[in-house]
Length: 294
Image (cartoon, rainbow, N blue to C red):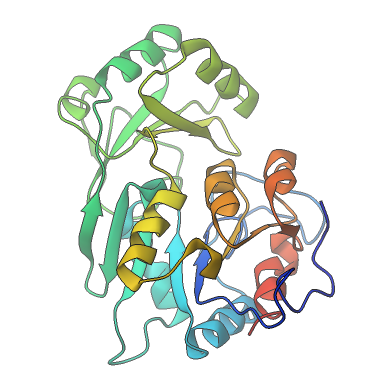
């Protein structure tokens, strides 16, 4: 695995330039709130809501050069539109942006927020199994376009904006959902990785975040599948895509894209599968990678 330093063209091609740029948000475009200046993840689980000028300018250059900029995140749809606004996208009177939300389960256009594709699954059995092992976990499901339903309040800032309401777990998983969040502030990511292995969770995919945060999604659904839907609509191929991300939920996306780049703050297993590794989010690694192409 090599870190991007002097690459100006994709290996094997003399003049490749991405036609679609897929960008994770938290830990890629946005720094974590307590991230130190350089060299350490410093992850609290709560992202900041400010873009550096370097990152904003680099994304704008890609967009103005004609690339489709697609925000691709584990965030819910309603908490992603504000990031598009921070980027100043789309341009006035231009086509609406494509956005891949909820780890690929929801695809939307913006503005206005218009869900054009959604994948759902039956989560009740998996959630019951998790609660048998860890009865005190926090559980949330997306209330699409509005906020979340949750069994108890999450730590401040973790679910983003929107209208969040308290509900019983039985109510939350009575019908198919696009995503379930399991959170335990007193556990570690390693605890949740082991929990996923122990339970098996047949028929459901899962991904563990930087904190003790477990996302349950439909089998086969990931940021890659959401981006594949967008590429089909735009008549593009995976080879046309530059993807940048930092989390375990970015692995499928980075493997699928023509060029998949991991942030310097990404876990080792994410960096290991990427085509290249850019700088830490605190050092504007996303801007560094985008500047090689635009």
